[in-house]
Image (cartoon, rainbow, N blue to C red):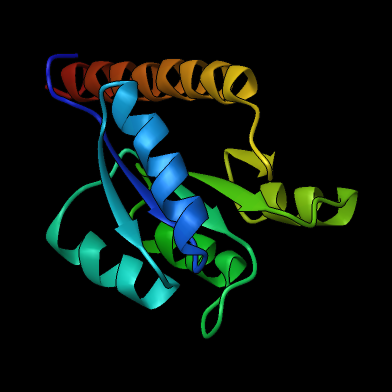
Length: 138
């Protein structure tokens, strides 16, 4: 894959947005930051994002509602739900709504690195499957 990966961090906490974005940028990605779900949707109208990292609890539209909107309008975008209040119920709900993973704050850089590698492999497989489906219908 030759193009640079595009990620977005959606969290109302500035320190979380900045630190997670900085880490992802060190991994070579282009990272957008949004303080709200509403702002994230505006950004998504202008650009494609490979992966969104979305906080569950935010003022206004919450992370689960954003997840549903992303899956409805941007199905190729992967979504990781992030929260400081990790419960089994939240994880199950996130996965039920189509999240690709669930991450509990504070983040461990090693775990984040493994998660990113897993997500990028998943994304690559989805893109290859899409390519082969298109080739098969020619």
